[in-house]
Amino acid sequence: MDRRHNGATGLYDPEFEHDGCGVGFVVDMKGRRSHRIIEQALEILVNLEHRGACGCDPETGDGAGIMVQLPDRLLRRVSGVALPDPGYYGVGMVFLPQDAVERAVCEAVIEHVVRTEGQTMLGWRDVPVNRDVIGQKARDTEPAIRQFFVGRSPDIPDQEAFERKLYVIRKTVFRTLESKGLRLFSDFYVCSLSSRTIVYKGLLLARQLNGYYRDLDDPALETAMALVHQRFSTNTFPTWPLAHPYRMIAHNGEINTLRGNANRMQGYEKTMAAPVLADDLSDLFPILQP
Image 1: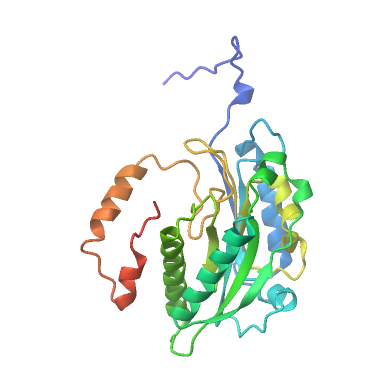
Image 2: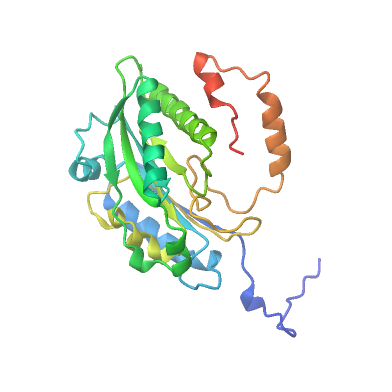
């Protein structure tokens, strides 16, 4: 096939061309945690900035983020919470409304659901951020960012079962807040809720991520793996929740079969079975968030 390079013509210049989002992954093959993994991942992210985008505000990116292992050593020092051993507690990273009344509603629902599901609500932590490094558009829509800590109950047999329980908690919180009329995604979003991983992300440029989230510059934040993502928004507008990584995935490019996939999943709900979830299964519907 003869492929000719398109040179600059009229208003077109190939220098303006972008590919889809940038994704990077760093791992210590022996599972050794260190802050060096964070530094290497952030270096990858900055080098991927050309794969992302910004709008008319050059200091507001389409989104950037990092997923790491739960930083137990850091959290024990800064959380103000008496944490159990690793694997026996989970951490939720949440975007909350700036409005104090709505934020209190969200927090009360989270605490109620955690206790209703038989787990222990250990406490909250305000995530330290530096909003001076982000653009005006990002500041205008910036959520309140907090972490909450969930203790594993004695009847949960292992960490895998605890992860499933945290999933049930997240879905129940979502459904409860939706019934109260909160504008989910714009007002409330759970970046991660896990005993294994945590996600730091936002409406940021790659170079702003560790300047905004002070935790990422702390040497006590150690991990054996890090997944980074720089977003180039195509089919959807940039927002804080739509930055990657998501809770379980980070991908390069939009999923154009979204509507078909969503319709198929809704159809599966009628016959869905999950023995490991038992009676909790019905609490998960709808599986996909609207």
